[in-house]
Image (tube, rainbow, N blue to C red; front, side, top):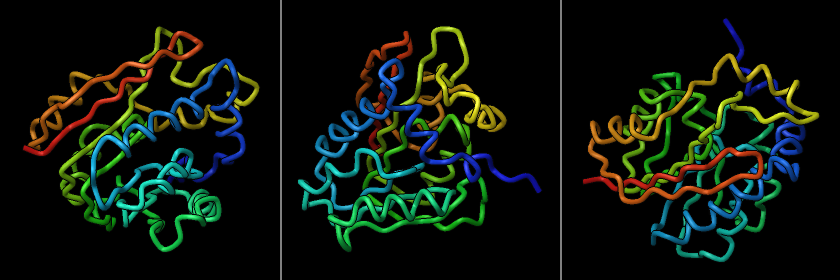
Length: 208
């Protein structure tokens, strides 16, 4: 049985790559997540692919969000996120889960956030996860590449190459059609430029 490469990538390599000035994705995602959390008055949220919890510190200032679930396939990532987010106290819970496993258990929440996550599971598995979690709101970020590979060039890029085996390209319009098929309507689309010619596309959906 093949081991999911996300279990083998060191969080330090991933985060150090993402925060390089020429990549600037860790910082950009943290800013986007603040907007995602503040845009909608929900009491429960799940972040798929939470990694080390980047961006969730903004929830310290949103006490109305009483239940926060960090979902990831890597137990080490979850341990780190819990330590970093200790200020959230009992509001933050970690969920070790592989959503590609049809038997995995996921919490029901009002809102699901999935940033740079769908690229590693595909449309169908993401839709199946939403059907389990039953959110009324979904906010996700996908990456738009000019031409080259999904992973930007950096001193850490070689250590992240193993992720290519589970990466799939995600098209915004195809994602919109996929989620429409399970009852979600597009509410907004926001593009954010990155330093190296890439873009983040944030798509927000509401259950109809």
